[in-house]
Amino acid sequence: MSTPLNYIPPTEFKRRTMAAISDPDLRANFRGAMDSLMLKRAAQFPEAQRLEELRSAGESIRQYSLARLPELLEQLETNLQKNGVQVHWAENARDANAIFLDIAQRHQAKLLIKGKSMVSEEIELNHKMAEHGIDCLESDMGEYIVQLDGGKPSHIIMPAIHKTKEQIARLFHEKIPGVDYTDNVDALIQIGRRVMREKFRSADIGVSGVNFAVAETGSLCLVENEGNGRMCTTVPAVHIAITGIEKVVEKLEHVVPLIALLTRSATGQAITTYINLISGTRRAGELDGPREMHLILLDNGRTQAYADEQLRKTLQCIRCGACMNHCPVYTRIGGHAYGTTYPGPIGQIISPHLLGMEATHELPFASSLCGACGEVCPVKIPIPELLMRLRKEAVHRPNSTTTPLAGQGAGRNWLAGMAFSGWRLIHASPALYRGYAWCATRFRSLTPKTQLGWTVSRTPLIPARRSLREQLHERNLKE
Image 1 (cartoon, helix red, strand yellow):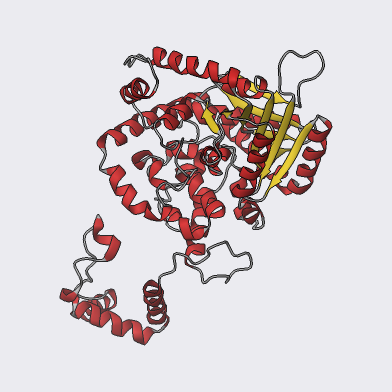
Image 2 (cartoon, one colour):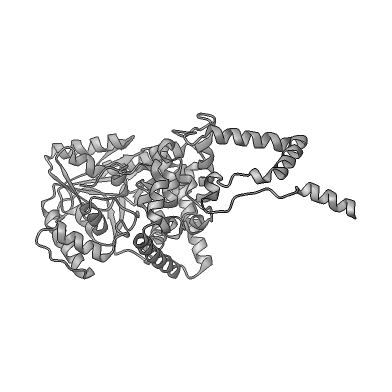
């Protein structure tokens, strides 16, 4: 089974980053994959004006939905219950796993089969079910590969993007009984399908994520390419869907532009192979579908982001991964370096709410602030602005703002605080500044050669022989 979420603590981000940069195979894999994804996305948006119109529409829909989030969630619950779906509310990962366990034990389930769901990764569902003797098998090919390897996804759309076909071939040969080594991609996919086909038949419960939940119809929209999501939601007798509370939209018509943005931004496809709309359990005369259906609505820190007008924009995300594909940091270190469910730029702004600032205060600083993530975000999340806000939150005094974040001030350093206080004092006083400049220029030879993080990749900062003020004064005397 997959290891727990924090299999490498996020606080060790710097060490893992150095390890990733030193791995030439990993860097080559990601560089090639990200270049391909960027080109595919660009090909799907040939007209800049049309793209901006679509992005503006997506942003408006997400902001409108979030502005009415409480009432839309209540409307969604009411209409889902009318459709025969049981709705559960989970404040955190512990509550969500308890709901899963209760349903599984009531049905004496031994095997859960999952379609792709990052929220299930967020709550460590596989690991928690395994603790109670219940197997939870991934049916998405990328997730299955990662699970078979005992690891975690490195990308929210393409979980096994860090693996080469040769590595996958060896993994299948070693872990799946009776499988000979082959690095033929089509053959590897067929091997995975054969394994999954039998599991779909024998699974007690199917699990899925949700891309969008439609309040007016009580429908769950599921976007996928492989068909495993459709199998998970129709073959087993029980279907459990889980989603974050922010995924709700008001109307079915709001889903259309969001899907157009999602599929093009994620994989460079005009549309994915399957768009599933699930509106309840099996009805009389239908040949497939679950006889019992549940939806778990998860908070897990999202209301913290929702409470702040600026940070609320984080919840506009439709989980396309475009910000990762264009991020110069992510494309060089990969997803595992972050140590969180959601890596890359979106992970840097959402993980502090899900895990707290204590564990994640370093992540907002892992950005060049080049702005590429904000430029390509299909729903116009101002990621660079949110990163700057979270950097401030990381060093604020705890509870010093009107809407403090959990773990606020976790990155606060008393030595750095003293240094900036001294800097502010010197620059607020002309006399102190002149005295400081005189000392810095006269004793420049005493400047340290190692200046913390600055000199890791740069030459030391050494004051000039004379300050600008002195040089201008000397020039005026000569003239």
